[in-house]
Image 1 (cartoon, rainbow, N blue to C red):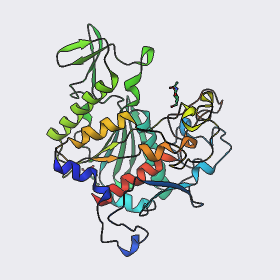
Image 2: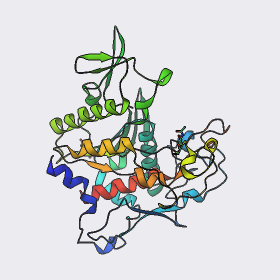
Image 3: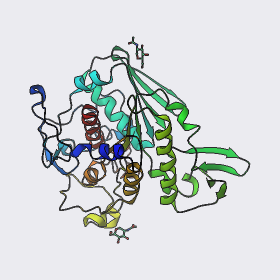
Image 4: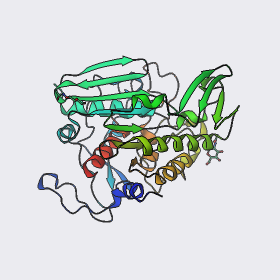
Length: 355
Ligand SMILES: *[C@@H]1O[C@H](CO)[C@@H](O)[C@H](O)[C@H]1NC(C)=O
Ligand SMILES: *[C@@H]1O[C@H](CO)[C@@H](O)[C@H](O)[C@H]1NC(C)=O
């Protein structure tokens, strides 16, 4: 096991002695784990106004779609033994000036990308920006900061190729996908939610591992093999002194309300407040455990945003019926913005500062 990778995965539990006067609100001590804590009400939140964010897609704009309660926007994450730095857009921009950042993954990755764009816009409301979408790649540029932030839709990270036999999911290959990743300074990967799809939503016909193609296999195993392919590619191809690699931890969904003591049919709807760790036990999240294991075996240092547990407490943070103005359907997977992914980005920023 690469000691470097292990060191980085535990970096957030490490001592930070020097705290500049300017950031005196951050008090670190050797017992501080940023990911253990609770949500606390904070009148000064949210970090931006959904009506003013020009990037926000309708599916995340819950207030715009008629969600009547707003309290869900007014919580900050409070670690048990220290404080998470308040979002400071200027500090973030100083760090990413002249850089290119890319979120690679499914729509949860897009959720986090949109959140970050809105957070930057909230800090610099008059900053010029350009947006473009080319196929599966969406780009936002802030020219005055020479900062480019992209979202590459790539739900499985490994390749899918069209062959005579059909669409083949290649668990051993990122050759096609990785072309976009070279030359990016900050990469944030995410995959999981599409590994369970079957039927029409399943984007492949066959799964190939080694030279063998098969119709189906245990999806958690397939996911683990794909993650190994990814992490080997990073170990071989990425100079992590220059390029920062993040993995978004597995974002929990909330489709089964019996898990928090409500009738199963309710799903995530009707929740207005966060749960405390005592009230909500999501239990072990298997894909997150797999991700942690695979990253722990890496040679190069990467950063895992361990957002699973803290997001599990936020059943109230999903769009539920407010994913569109007609209130058709139910979304207990994505997150309203402003909302939970804003905290993921604060944790990302914190990690960039410490790395
Ligand atoms: C902007 O950043 C790119 C790298 O992303 C760099 O090559 C270029 O020189 C920068 N341009 C300016 C005007 O700083
Ligand atoms: C929902 O969760 C409960 C309690 O954990 C479990 O018994 C039940 O099987 C789950 N239902 C579904 C549809 O997964």
